[in-house]
Length: 207
Image (cartoon, rainbow, N blue to C red):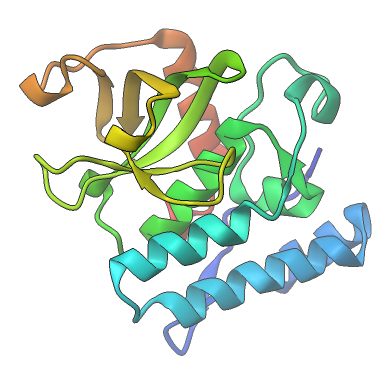
C-alpha cells in the first residue's frame, strides 16, 4: 500500500504539480513505471484544462482505461478498498471503483462542475456483477454519458442496455437511481464511510 502523505499537491505558475516527494516515493515503492504514470497524469491535467468538456471526457477516459483491472482482494488484500488516483496510478491498476474515482477527481481538477459528474453503481449484465461507472450530465435533464472501463467508447446511457443503474453519488450526496430526478437523497453508511476514508487520503487540491 502506498504509505505516503497525499496532501501536498500544489500549483506552480498555475500548473498542476505533483510534489517531488510523492513521485519519488511512488518510484521507490513501485518502480520507474509508477513515476512515469504519475508524470503522465500531471501532463494530462496541465494540457487538457483548456479543451472542451467533450474532449476532457475523452482524454480522461482513454488515459485511465490503459490501466489494468485488478480485484481488490488480489491487489490490496481487502474485500473492498477505494484507492486514490495516486494509489491507482502508482500501483498500475485497480477495480472498477478505482477507475471511476480517478476519472471523477481528474475531471474535477480539469474544471468540470461537480454537479455534472457522478459515480454511479450499476448492475452489469455481461458479466452479471456489480459495477461502477462515471456518469456525465451536460445539463440536469440531459441523458448522461457513461465513462466505463469495460469499453473504450463513451456512450449515452440509452445505448448501454447492459447496465442497470442502482444509485449514484458525488461530493454533494447520494441518490437512488429512480429517485434522483426528484432530488431524494439516501444514505449508505458503508459506502459513505469508504468515501470519507478516501477523502482523508486525497490531496486537498483534488477534492
